[in-house]
Image (cartoon, rainbow, N blue to C red; front, side, top):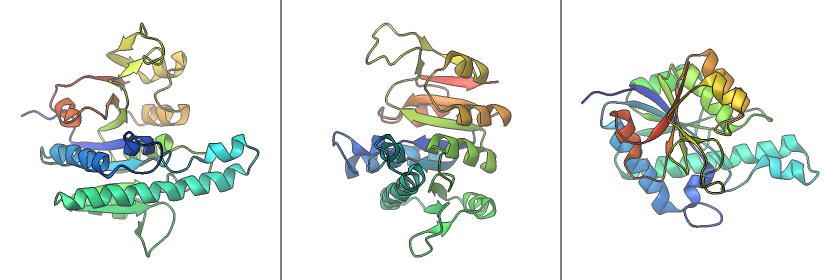
Length: 237
């Protein structure tokens, strides 16, 4: 079976782990996402993951209420570590060898990130989960995903969302919003399409990394798209 991309980075939002809850981690959802990752990995695809922390804490929420943005972002980075550990646990239950690398040093909990270590773990067949964002405030986990994709030499950046691609507007609010099958990085930026932040899209463009936007809530969709099926929007040069 032909594989479209052999080395991919998957961006998972923290909110995706909530399931139907209003906060925290739904273990059943984490297990299902882990199963999708395993299915794709079993195809022979090398997979790394960047996970957000919005189900636990969002740094911008602190700034919006007059608090210190830097402190808020640091708290959000810690939330991503919790989520990364949860996803690693779900993968381990399925017999998948996974490692968490954090941009913030916390050796008692997980290894610290370096490109050299990440590539070594990937070469050993492990799913590498990146936590702690970029390790710097004012950068989103979308930007972290594009950065890590470039550092890993990923052939595609997969963005798991709540919908099956990129639309001209939120299809849940605008039922007749236009859905795009394919776009360029420049079109995403010029149209102001809210799929990833500007820094992330620009970084992917500069490194010629396609962005594939798909629904993370469709079981098995990750593997289907990797083998040429499924439903998604691809952003290319």
